[in-house]
Image 1 (cartoon, rainbow, N blue to C red):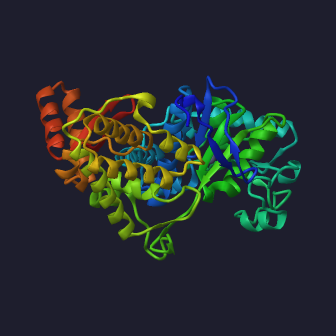
Image 2: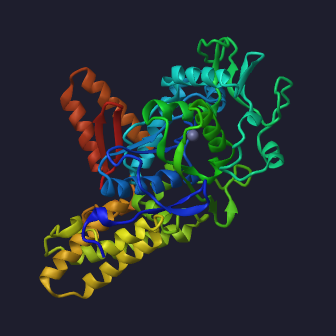
Length: 469
Ligand SMILES: [Zn+2]
């Protein structure tokens, strides 16, 4: 066992090599991780929450091992689905994207997901996309045709390496439109023309907008550099999105390695069925947090290994709640002793070793339960203080058990007793009061929210809220 936290060996399953490999950052002074974030035009479902939670755990773990982590998770705020939603509502796209980006941040915050270090917006990276597309044309990897710019897949001999697909699969798997200007059916769009009523930016190829894939490549280049340590996302993004990101970035950088490690989390099914609108079983995080504590939803998502498919069930969520009752019950039993931060900030080596083994959260949770059972039968005050410190210290690494146990049992574990729409209305009223310098009213609204178990925080991105814990 290592007593020094830097003594842990982190292994991660790399989708590109299909192997578990020892992870060492290229530069320990600047460890870089990028995860594809939401396209903000509607509410996030539980399948969207899984990568947010899984990579939040990885970010917390990496920060313990390497204090200089730069974690970027983007917001896709220009995309055809957003344009369609805005047109249907008769509002500018920014009205739709700001609303759903805020809801996403709040909902993920309720699940204990910490904000990434950088949250780049696609619409703030258009110059970088245009520059990258121009370089791809220059290098012969892309071509202009009828106002579009397309990436020419046969120009990249390595294309397909990440998803392991052969050419026929790729053509069948890509959403192939009947586009006569495509040189090859697998070619994909980097830039496309916008009509006058569609949002667009001036470019050397006329007024238009980017394709989805180029957004991530350009945001990574701008904020993290040409080679990053880890690229993450859901398995549904491996093809074509990540395959295309890989092709664009590698070709734009003269063959330089784009992402050293690719990590993908498994699908989320609902009660053994695929989640789909047609079945009507899409579970929105926004609804779930009204029924269950965010911490229980988080635990239910971490109860299986991240690479495995996760079967989301009502019973699984109820079980996660009971698990938290047990863990918080152990902490409540330790109320008379003070947690003492000993070696490793209280994080037991067995817990760290489990997480360092390709983020084995089920094994790490088993260590937590072992600590809880020992706490329940231990009588020595010194050992009990140490167990308390270990429960809280280990919990922090996976974003659990940071609440006062009395608060959990008093009902913080029950979820907010106020509708999200009502919370947002109150926050807007408070912001209006603050603008008018009516601070008494602003404070009154803050107190009203607090009475309903909602904690608010003012930041540069505006006011965010979360269920108090
Ligand atoms: Zn992406």
